[in-house]
Length: 152
Image 1: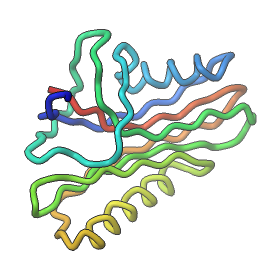
Image 2 (image 1 turned 60 degrees about the vertical axis):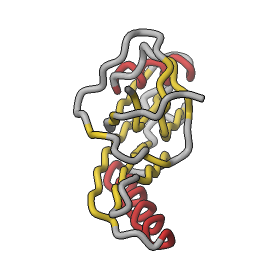
Image 3 (image 1 turned 90 degrees about the vertical axis):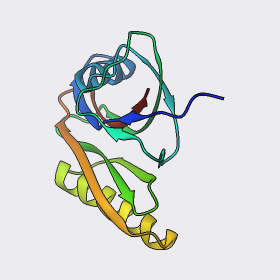
């Protein structure tokens, strides 16, 4: 079992490249998480995890992350990704992620609504909400990425 992460941040990036995987890799670099190994997790922020605005981990580290991403080869289309973290009165948090064919504002609104709903059906008071999103107009092969890395 991995140790429980004690810190988190919100990141977002977008990029263009010739190939889809390169666009994704460049979006990760743009978001500041391109030189670590991402372990995709579901959507619970550990109790007591502290927000840190600057993500720091040595290259090659294994980093748990909840994220949304979308890659498109449709020139001119607008794509967006967003994540939200809600922290409740019980001490732990809920993370929601989204990526789709829309703008940043719509993507951010969707994740806000998802976090609010998640706390509502858990019967827990939402006390804090953080959101980040990004949009990108595809030139030839574009990618958007938004995530919540959890680290130690």
